[in-house]
Image (cartoon, rainbow over all chains, first blue to last red):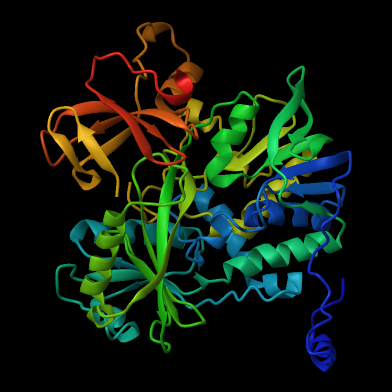
Length: 414
Length: 95
């Protein structure tokens, strides 16, 4: 793999950018791998990368039924933050935050991590109590964040309507939070993993598992059977479908989660503004589009579409809080399928089938943890034992009752 | 926008309704003998199928009553609506 640099840019400009090397190889699948990752989204590709880079295991295949990052990785609103309530969550989301900071340099691929700050607005006394509680809790976990009064919020976002249907009483600000380019994260991990020897196999669907004596021996795919020692399933919204192939049930429900972008305009929003109370969050992409996230549709679905009433609710809140956007046109709207657990925390776990591991349940907020999730899952797969940061997210918590309840911090409708 | 056929009120927009997830999960009767594993399965684990899903709804902004529906979660197409206590109709791939 040739390194991206100013020199390579100049050299390729001489040939009118016709001769850039493909970013990753697309090999024929081998008959056998040490570890197979099911799902080529951000989390799966990050897992493969850290397996090769940090665990010295390069005999790895990532099997993706569509194209890389074509699922939730390419459908989220690109927000990165770690201001979660509980110690277990703080540990994993802030682990990801540490990795985000150096990710572009590490991957030699610009993931456009932009720490532009994330504001959580409070519109009521109970919203204020929630951000105080969470803000103080995360302070104990050394995650820097600040409480802002309405005047400070107005200073950051001068066009916000402070007195209205949703009065702004204060906000919680995490300055290290922000955005990253979602596609670039998938492509950057894929390129770096491929360069280290990982086989990335697209347009190949896993259709079943070869399980003998309660131990996984390999996967069945639309391009034939592939043997392996260990499998990590990172299939997001379709995790329950993949689990059923192995005869497993998961504590998950899959819902549509919608987002939309506006026509591009000049820079106007230089931070990320979220609001738990009204479920409308907004940021601006480097292209100039306003990126708007909605709450999830509250019914099971795999259709990758949501209901219009959710969009209507979201946009009325956007127009109420930011009246100047009321005449903007929305260009695109889409839905992703999110796999939601009852405590809004992920499942990173072994299963009842030996050597079959699952990393799922990231629900509405998995993108932000892509590096952290991949990192701890890679170490867990390499060792066969869960990484200490991943251990609290075992599937066993749904039997023991030791839930990690992030209902408030996940910032979506429940 | 989904359109539902409330068995009590007739056809209405989905915004009048609320979905309550998988239907026909019977509360266990031998609870004193159940271990943590069995309780966890009952409370938290769901079938979550891609395809035919039997589910519970309430008509919140209407009659406020409960009913059941059968829907294909891959296409969002409703296949049947029926009242609580009625036998689940066999539809689609279940036939």
